[in-house]
Length: 63
Image (spheres, one colour):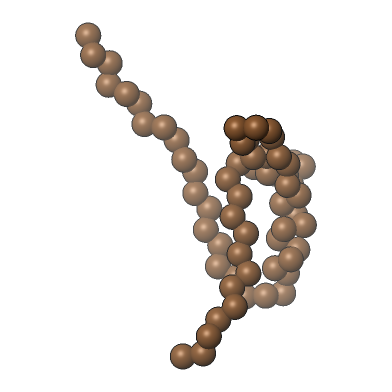
């Protein structure tokens, strides 16, 4: 099998489709990325897309 070159982007943050931005909250600051521009980098190329949402599990109350 031939070697591969992989172009990947990984961002974890709040997606706003109205502005096409992703806002990442880091400990030291908040960063905003242009999601549409990120997608344009992959335009016309074969891609694999995976989207996931993370939520905290509820903690059982001890009474």
